[in-house]
Image (tube, rainbow, N blue to C red):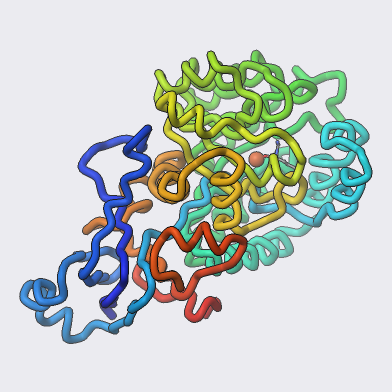
Length: 422
Ligand code: NIG
Ligand code: FE
């Protein structure tokens, strides 16, 4: 049944004639409409216009449509979470406590915990266990207004488990209403069995895993954790270049803990995005701006690891297109609340209220090649629409750490009502 949303205080469209991710001042252009209704037909946005105009243009559709009264509320595009480690087993609250008592993230990982702990759990978990856990996470994402989620593998570090994770993501895409976009991240860590023999693991990824990912159509993107003690820039480059030959688009976990010229590498090899960038160099940032590499910033990780925040303000001022995401994972950012992450980006990265909205909608869509279907409210795009319990968008950041979601419409279907998944 068509849906028509009336009387919203503000409709944030983020529409633009210009192509490409938004940069500089364009990140502040929310293109807000007032006094309009939004007509959704099947899974698409049909039109956004004053009510009398819609009635004139679409008399039949308007007569049969379900009407939603959004009076006193705002309407905006569904949020896009463009960097998550959705499919994994277990939790790591004990490590969090160890970190509160002084241990560092890399120390815990070096001692066989961290990513290695989750890898062991994920290897042990059955397909169905992983599927069910991830399915429930996706329902939580819906509650916070997220309608598209990227999901990285990387807690297998052997083909059997990497394939299991990617197949879980594929089944979720087929069975859950959420859109799930898949990234292969076999190079998330060097597994224990390859310690001291790192290059052999790099060979395994290049020679065996990447061809299978491509042949089975299991991912669109290829990501590497380029970090001291994990993968060197040279190893990362080899893995990402090899992925390109199989049509996998490069992404990089870059300059997260120590500067390692990850931003420079991302710009040079034409990665769609460099992610984290807590300690990226000025030169790397300049090169990203020139290459148009999207910076996917993850302030939840800096918060939870008590690390310095990425220099979001500086990046935007230099012309880097910025996206913001949760990095949802069991170690460095166990949260699904993208609204809270937006607030961290305002407070700790110096982004404005407008910029964080752009960074979690259209720019995040660009970071996963979904800008043609989601990230803004424009006729012909997917009907992924939020109705939020606030009278203006500024209230979202002001009443922080709260969930303002009232209704979530995913591909033309109401999936959350009164803040609850239906
Ligand atoms: O993006 N940096 C590497 N990977 C994840 C953390 C994974 C984990 O700790 O389980 C991240 O922060
Ligand atoms: Fe990550």
